[in-house]
Amino acid sequence: MKIITRFAPSPTGYLHVGGARTALFSYLFARHHGGQFELRIEDTDTERSTQASVDAIFEGMNWLGLEHDSEVKYQSKNLARYHEQINKLLSEGKAYYCDCSKEELDEMREAQKANGEKPRYDGRNRDKGLVKTEETVIRFKTPLTGEVTFDDHVRGSITVANDELDDLVIARADGMPTYNFSVVVDDADMGITHVVRGDDHINNTPRQINIYHALGFPVPEFAHVPMILGDDGARLSKRHGAVSVMQYAEDGYLPEAVLNYLVRLGWSNGDQELFSKEEMVELFTLKGVNKAPSAFNTTKLKWINQQYIQQANNERLVELLKDRLAALNIETDIDLHQVVELFKERAQTINELADMGLFLMQDLTGYDEKAEKKAFKAGSDTALQAIIDKCEAVTDWQGADLHQLIADVVEELEVGFGKVGMPARLALSGQAQGPANDVIMKILGQKESIKRFQAALDYVKAKLAE
Ligand code: GLU
Image (cartoon, rainbow, N blue to C red; front, side, top):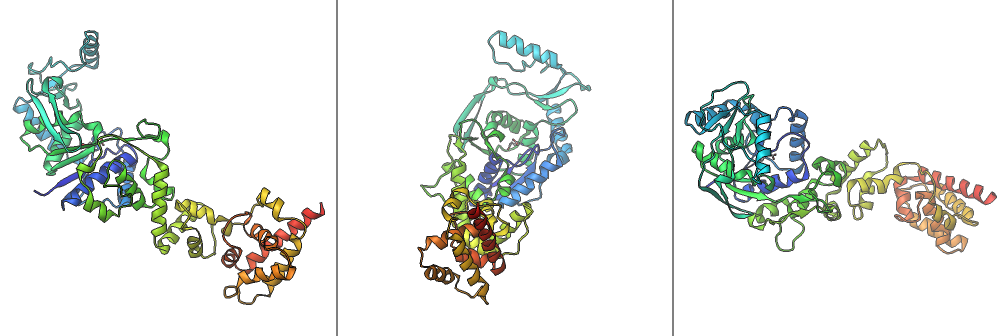
């Protein structure tokens, strides 16, 4: 049997982390079995669905590299097919019109609650043979007896008695089919063999199975994947920070790192942490999916991202760095390859990498206060002046041994290395810590290096004159 899975988001917002993780599991299961992965946009809720959300979903899927096989299916373009199937159920006596008003339904619910019963539609119009009006909805005749059983790939065997389920609405008064109906028709029409989705839908599954039976469609298999929690144990939401997949792109994460993080969120293969996409495809099984919800952990995501940045090709990191600098409106002519080489081991995100390199691209705004007390004092002026003199004498800056240049100053002044090295570092970077002076000088170039030493010298002189 050829395995076909799908991801079926409702376009009412961006692609969030939970949806992306569900999509990934669905994708991996299909790819692992050499099957097909499909994308369906569930946009029958015309008030909440937007084109911007559809675009955001495509953008997120594309960024993560979760490519689907067939053309995208839109539920809003498939209404005739749902109506045909609804009419079939009506004509076979498996569905009926119901004219209960909202008030009537509320009353029903209140009365049931008062009697200690579970609130549900009581089937009062089931056998009345009502006809269609502008107010009538269509309800599905859930079998009155028997039970529904399915063997969930994650949760195991689940059985629900039909008398626990009520006659659900399958078409609203305006004729729009409801989720539980359209999802069945589409999954059947698309030949979906395995429905992999969030476990917030697990209560819908017995209802949907009854609809499959009523329409005479084969019932697919199901895998309900647990939800993602925030670090406080509550369901992951905006409150916990970034939940939109594209926010991670903006925050400087690499897509393969996000994928890797997501696959480990509720799935494991021994104690392996890093997986290429090929490895994920090779190793993924639904059996490896945890039943329990998993908690989102930004520290771990950052660690994974760092591993991928360290492994990434420098050309690619330069391009990503350029994008980030453009987003920050920073223009520079320094060689970004050098910036990447300098910081790729330490940066956990591209944005951090950009931040680490900012002092090379922008004028210094001042000197670290604590460092300044130690590094800019009597004698620093002499050291800075000596460095400037040596720098000015260099004819081939990129070919010069700038480490030696500083060492020569140390030797000539007959002082400890710190007496020259510290003021130089502070002059070049504004900070006490950072890359070696000669490395910074190479990247900045001769003119800018001298400019920074001169600015520091002027600053020290003014300070000493106070
Ligand atoms: N449109 C539904 C959702 O976004 C899909 C549920 C399903 O996969 O069946 O929750």
